[in-house]
Image (cartoon, rainbow, N blue to C red; front, side):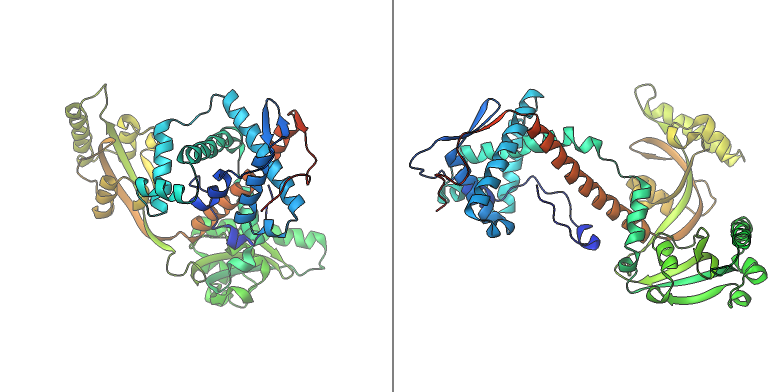
Length: 447
């Protein structure tokens, strides 16, 4: 498998290749060539690959790959043979592991292919026949593709892991591209420590910066700390730098800001002037302009499940008792710890943290959206059971960073998947018995 390196921002949008195959890609592979003299070209464990199969696969590669257009006939034949060998090995592995595709799933995939070609199944069969393809053979090829994908998921996908550190490192490395056209509204504290000062002075400055950062977080008053302690020209304005174009900011700032959420305080940032603390007040522009804001609420709730052990009526009775205690002034957190069946939030007193409507079931989201701050809702039912909730805060949250992290994670996952899949296929090939019966380039004619 050949991996083509493309820029990060391009690759982020590339999803895993679909199992849905076009008619064109498989057409050549299923149109049997009238090879005058067919021979065994290779033996793969207990299977054989015929000369005609190589010729047909080479035609497919030449028709479906831009890279293949640059291959000589001999190179194309070698690529086709390698392609067939890897396919045989995967099908053998799948058989050993009992992996198969049931007829219902296969039929659904074929129907999906037909729909993508804007054809009914009857029209689809006719289209195959018009291209000289046998429907039974086509069905077999689609089945093989699905089997190999299922095998890959079992053997490779489960081993792919992308750490948060890897995600952050990738985003930081691409911060210059990501921040094109972006403007940041910033507050700033500087502890002066120019390059070249004694190490002891630099360490002392860093410690002072770390202390100021903690002070900012605990006091929740960036303005006051900046006015009293910053070495920056904007100290008297509470460190407010106003709107700044990302391109004009130091690279060290851009690397931090590409991962910082609106309202958040950065870690201490070092550059040639000293140690900096940044607060991101707002941002605008760039590729995500107009798509960054979503309403989030900080919510706590109590859930009483309806299940085999508790009927709907019994669950309603319990939630009514809880509601009555809340109306009488009982502590919400204490009751959640005592009564709630939501194991994920029970220990924290029913606290769900900051959530958006899209992340919740519709019934819960609707009540949360309508509920006034700090008032306990009436009891209501969702598909999970009976609830009461309380909205503690609401805010407009920036989600561009979350989207960026998700894209980076998908990109890294895809890249790791391709690398691991290639490595696994090569190990599979190295452990197999493969005998080449015919030297490549002899007797194979591509018309």
